[in-house]
Length: 129
Image (cartoon, rainbow, N blue to C red; front, top):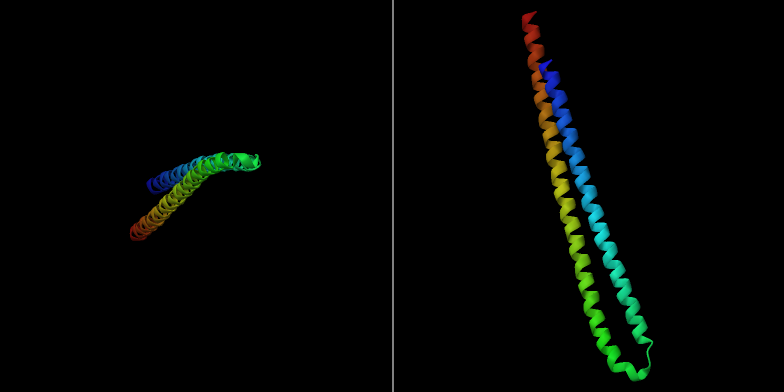
């Protein structure tokens, strides 16, 4: 009974840990997806502004060059933000994989301990008989 109760508790703890890891992964992925979508929308908006500026009269060429420089800086900033967001996502995935690997190791360890406990219990019953 003690072993079974312990196994049930260990299984519950494992399930909770897996659920937490899954929920955190979902939260992180949603946050990153939102950041990437916002960066893409910003980039698209800046691209539209750039194209609109290029359509102006030839006499506005000096102003267009100035706008182009600003837009390029903003696009570069957005690209940097996207790369940073992707890096954060990759780091999160790596951390989550580490958590999963750790949990798998815990499960293997707990399984081994359970098997040892069952073997000892069977040996004790065998010796008692």
